[in-house]
Length: 137
Image (cartoon, rainbow, N blue to C red; front, side, top):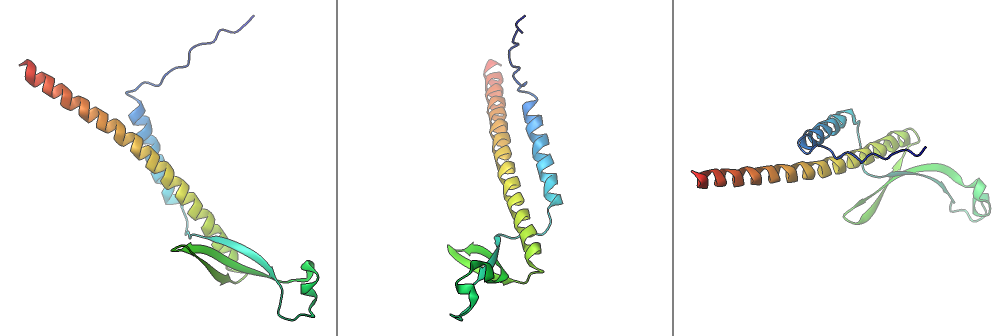
């Protein structure tokens, strides 16, 4: 026996601003869970040395390293900072926190714009209603 499809429910317009505001505050609270952050990517490099007779020139498996670098951009220029093996995981975690922060801020901005648009519509309606009441007296 075929199933009957029920029409999709449309969210109640009066509860939507509340839901958006609730989601906004949830995202805002998640900012508290962020740890230290920094922009950039941690790279692990295996390098060739300056000695032409060294095995690192002929065999990629015998290159020197690993050497760690933090890479990021400032004013369109790439900046590389050498890191110790102990510092590399700290900066890698900080880079992940930075990406999490950017995602959160993007979501907060979109929600904020939606809420502001809804508030502007409500304010316009209220002004229109006040004008109508003033004219009907």
